[in-house]
Length: 114
Image 1: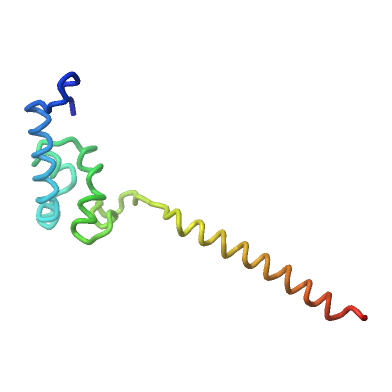
Image 2: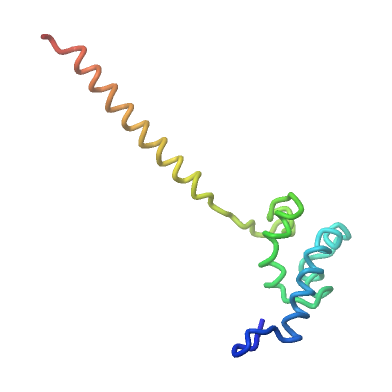
């Protein structure tokens, strides 16, 4: 979207695009339920395909569904990685290593003669 850089005000074109995006977000699910493709929806609201795709996350959240459910069947699914899950897995792996080392030390101590 192009804005007037000097004044910081939105142009009529910017306002029109923002309004169409809001209408598309509200109408996306009903359009999908009618069997419209994402390309059809982008044409319906006079928006680019990339604009529709960029807003799928927000549409999904607002409607309590996953982004993948909004995509056409058989399309590439958008994989998001939860950073907390990655950190948790690493922490668990580290704890398993520490546990194995402690078990070995405990076994070594219990087999040693004093």
